[in-house]
Amino acid sequence: MSTTQFDVIVIGGGPGGYVAAIRAAQLGLKAAVVETAQLGGICLNWGCIPTKALLRASEINHLLHNLDEFGFAADNVRFDFTKVVKRSRKVSAQLSAGVSHLLKKNGVTVVNGFGRLAGTQGTLRKVSVTSDGGETILTAPNVILATGARARVLPGLEPDGRLVWSYREAMVPTELPRSLLVIGSGAIGVEFASFYRNMGAEVTIVEVADRILPVEDAEISTFARKALEKQGMKILTGAKLGRIGKDGGSVTVEVTAGGKTQSVVVERVISAVGIVGNVENIGLEGTAIEVDRTHIKVDPYCRTGEKGVYAIGDIASPPWLAHKASHEGVMVAEQIAGRTVHPISPLNIPGCTYCRPQVASVGMTEERAKAAGHKIRVGRFPFIGNGKAIAMGEPEGLVKTIFDEATGELLGAHMVGPEVTEMIQGYVIARTGELTDAELKETVFPHPTISETMHEAVLAAYDGALHI
Image (cartoon, rainbow, N blue to C red; front, side):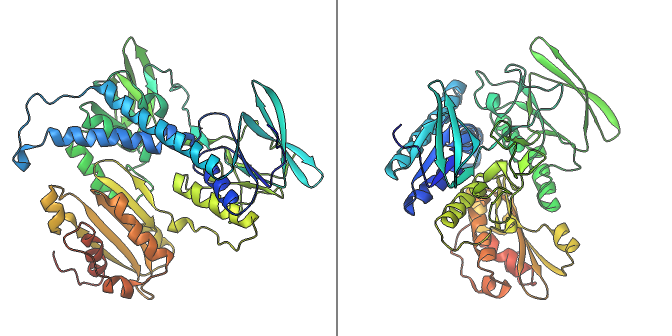
């Protein structure tokens, strides 16, 4: 490698890191990305993208087994599970190669190896990169830490690659288990539960909180739970794990919920209980960078306590979402290039869960809005009142809007139903653009579309819903 001095060095090539490097290069900065594994990070290789490929397959399987409603019949419907998994890996590989092409196209230098902060050299920061070829020292006045995170491991439930899985093992099984237990009901846990249930496995979800999808609005969580249980899932909330035993090809987990203790016997267990930031061995020692519960403390501009060092994505503050990491990457790159930037408001970052039915939200929940002292107006509109949803055979859903009564500000929007992960962006734009109920009421939605439920939910907050 001929060049070792850059304007900005990004440690980590995930959705935050590679986007930051591309934007920096577009702005005329000499940029480098240091990556020890595959470009695209967990999101592209072991998270967002391959899980969506798997979920798409499970949706097709569900549809093929429910054709009668549409007047069709299909005999001997079956699937090749190996091909289902293989396709998801192919999708990831294609996109990872695409990231490599984009970095090359934009003139970003990719350095393969493990990167860590290694002190300073005058006004420059040093980054040590180790690989099989030895050590290389890179320098730049600015370094962006984008090393991401990994799955949190519970004692006694360490992934063994056979009976107990993390998200990695759950994504590349050699065969479909007949039964499994999913521990944790955040987005990752519920998505895996949805995939395996729709492929035919018996699924039980265990959640320590009093409801599934605990970061979502309580009303939406309740709706989603009923929908998942209707599909045949067993859900235990307010639950505690007891003794865990492995016996040949099965796992027995003692679960206490609702004052009762039961033994759940399954072929596989998926542990989905959160993430841990990758802050180890990246040279934070001796710096002014602070770490709080495995995540680096940053200000609203993603600046750490060390001058010239930024942190973005899962290694930094929540929410830990790929699109938040990418947006931070752009903001930091523009900041380094001298552009005027604006902090990212966490309340304007959408959250999406791609189960069946999908869940999406932005802004405050009803509970949080009340706790913040807002006097609110709430609008609700069910999908059963939407013509397109009924025509599609997808009438199960709900849109909920929360407005400040005094100002008309859209405080939050919460959705459950088909394709709501695509629709939520309308409300995100409304919040980012600071639109009020007045503008949203006057917005014309095309007919027939599922998105009309969004308009009706706004009208419903002011007693003006038309189709319910």
